[in-house]
Image (cartoon, rainbow, N blue to C red; front, side, top):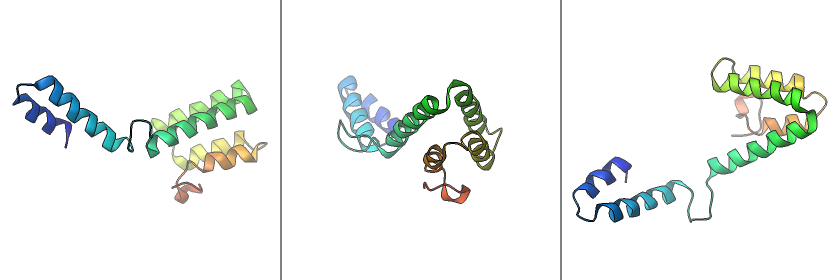
Length: 116
C-alpha cells in the first residue's frame, strides 16, 4: 500500500493517528527487508561501502582519501563517468591491489567490476 493511499484511507477514519502509524510501520517493514532487526540489501551495501572507505582512509592516508572522495562526489554529481572514476581509483590505489579489488565489488560488471 503506498503512503498516499494510506493517508487517504486514514483521513476517512476517526482514529487517524493510530491507523496511519500502523500502516506506515507495515509499509516500512516490507521495504526494509523483513523484521525489526533485519537490514535490507541497500542498507547492507551502504554499510559495506562505509567500511571500505574507512579502510581506504586508514591505509592510504587522508590526502589520497580526500582525492578519492572528490572522485566519488564527481561521479555522484554526474561530472565524471563510472569508468573515469574507476581509472582514478586505480591510479591512486596502484600500491594496494586488495583495496582496488574491494572497490571493484561495488561496480557493475559492465564497468569491469565484480558486483551486480
